[in-house]
Image (cartoon, rainbow over all chains, first blue to last red; front, side, top):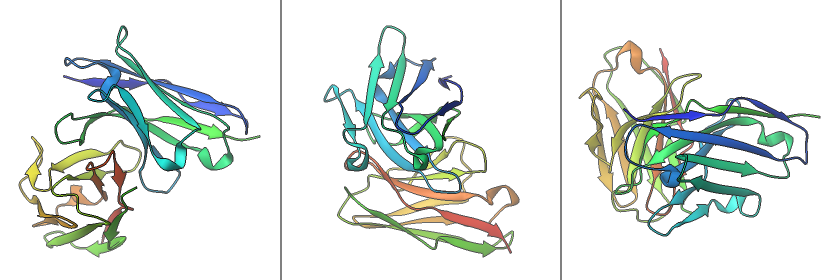
Length: 119
Length: 106
């Protein structure tokens, strides 16, 4: 059984950065197929970006270009998402999810990490 | 980026009702469309992938159809555990979610 376990809740001040981890266990894939989705309080799901093994690079949603970095550490089967220049409207639950290579759907999800941005 | 528009944004229904949710893509995405269910405080759960394929373990009352730009999620007979929010997601280019449809008890 595949499990994605994320790091714990974070509190940050505006202008700072946060890095969330997502460790993959079970299955045969590494962190290279991990995407990140966030959900602000009471709002919908927002895809931020993800690692794409086929092109061996990360692809980001236009909204987050230049402010987010997604990397994967194959040696520890862990994916990371770093968001910089945090604002109050970045307060959200951040999810990692495994992207199925063939069809691109998200079949396994982490438990979510609450990031609170407040002065 | 491809835009995904879901409708309605919310609906009220009774147990046993047939419920239909639609999702429209801003360009042709063939069948690269997937549906998720999310309950409060939980991560989303995959229901249907590639427009019409039921994920393992998902009840057969859920079905999906469509191709190109217009897609539909149908719940044939709404059950108490189906009250939740539903999202569509395209994977034709990277990934974008629809705005969600909240299914509430009438």
